[in-house]
Length: 574
Image (cartoon, rainbow, N blue to C red; front, side, top):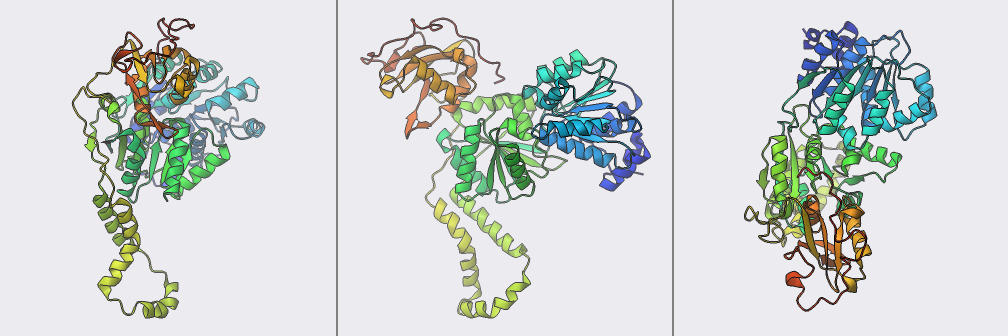
């Protein structure tokens, strides 16, 4: 007996499940489906990405929908176009034996009028991204005032992407007596706020521990100098020849730069970020799904909703600002019970962030060493030998064998093998034979990127930076420079700017300190290192670096907003 039968599903769904080869429900399906089928209730379900949440809400939704009534009865909101299409296709597969049931996807990047026509033809279930749904509501192209069910899928991702206002507005157009089912990997404050505002005594189910990482993912970090991040990334890729990975960067600029470097160095890589057109994004994702791309370099926002099976590694080229975002990143691997690895390339100044993440995901990181040159060469040698061993023979080569044998007739077996292997092995050996050790020692607990000085946890922090008036900066342009390189900083987040001849000082809230020191670890501009340190003289503008050189005019007291307490920084989780 198929275990799905025990959940109370009807014959039409069971037939579709059999066609798809499903035999055993996942934990979230086993917990959610019987409750949703038996009751008209709201539900909050917490489960990691890749645990089968679509079927957990999709099966009960399809069974409860009246397929004879063409009005819209169910609305599913999901964070991205890709996830929207994926859910739509899965629901169509589930409902293949349910006569008259139509599922329509609504998302940006496609004709809004065509989507409106699809809805008008009859759509019992609409799957939508919040932005496009709000647009269609504003244009009176869709009516959700009589729906019975509303599902918020990947709720935490939608809210991380800034859709709180859209979701609140969309839900305000739905009837109060509907059932709302909220599915999320984590339960940050914003998700709890939505649940409290729009749900009534919801049933709660949790798969695993709240906000915890999946048990199938191994977490590792590699401690290197900031300037060696890219070299470390290459070595990690070379030490895992069959890697199929997503590499996360913090900014669009870094994403594009890292992808371009990987491509130049011969890796099958591509960038995925917000500056790509929808057509470019679709082409990149198609190539990634077909494994023509081994390393997809992405920003967090662009990667929302990526659902690709068998990703072997997630590589954090840079850590995200929010701990919950790390959980989403690592959830791209280790799915459907398979194992995966989440790697972090870490500068010493970021070391304490690992402890903060461990508390949230309730998993320990393994401190690993970046592989050395000979270790990588050995891995690649054995990989090549296995590749040769497992290669299927193309019989067309038989035609050329006599001529090939004639060329190779004076070479004995062992020498021939050496020559064949050396064609590929020599490339790695020549590259790595003089390669340096990239690993950095963690040092003492209090050691940071500026020696033994501890990083303040609260209040205002004053920094020293080794650029000033002779580099063409005044107080305005220095603020512009900092904001251009630290996207999290607003103009009012930088204050008490004091520009000297060849160096300067400025202040921010302590919440930004880790981010600033992380970004300006081994930061280069026009071939020159730009260094930022915490000033050893936080009360003034000179300190140990100012002896006899205080020639530049100070702007710290006569400019609007300087000299007074700055705007409080954004809420950080580190």
